[in-house]
Length: 316
Ligand code: SF4
Image (cartoon, rainbow, N blue to C red):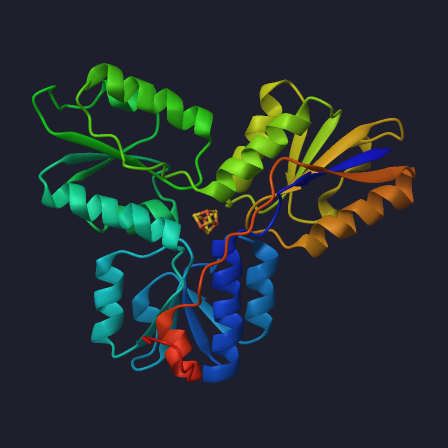
């Protein structure tokens, strides 16, 4: 078997920052430590933190008054922040700065009187957080058909923003429908789909055509992982999204195949390596890395955490 490992794959700067935030908070604050929503959408990451005493909650009412709560990488709405404040909680905000950027755009457009079309998946944690910044101004659109059904006229002020982890192709189709129906729609100053999503999608797009099979390592609720699988499928290559090696099904493989492996932005690298070892044990063969682009993005830990840690440079 020939195994081709896509680069970049796995953890992005936002996920690294969010995971390190929980690790550091465990050291400083101890347990129980509360995290609002899954810190990142990966079952292994979440299960490991649960073992270490982290309590994940889906409602601030489940966080005891005056305790410490971390907000996940996907961001939260002002209503959640206010509820935590009212309970006297210490808030550590591990929202990815690239999600915060989209929140800021929503706030700015709402202040300027725009009807904001948020291209994204209803119910996703990130989308719920962004909608919460301007609930009366934002309409979620998930498809070109949704755009067709919008009640706004060409006289209305329209702006659009996007979830950070969409498929660029899907987003382009919806943006095309928006521009057709609302030619004066305000275009975001810069791309909202983040660098990590884009790079992982481009890498798998470039490698999938060489593959008999694509494996995407990631959880089913990880938006960017699901998009990677869909992209691999586009040119007819069989693709599977798996959390870990226990989900490998041996009737998917044979020894003469080329298998391309990538990982969503929240999937730990050790899971990839375990899958590679399992396939080599079963089928023999060799492993090569292929590179689409190198990444060197880094995000600082949240200020509140650095203050709790006693960092001298905070605010300097
Ligand atoms: S996938 Fe993109 S938006 Fe999400 S945490 Fe990573 S860098 Fe941030």
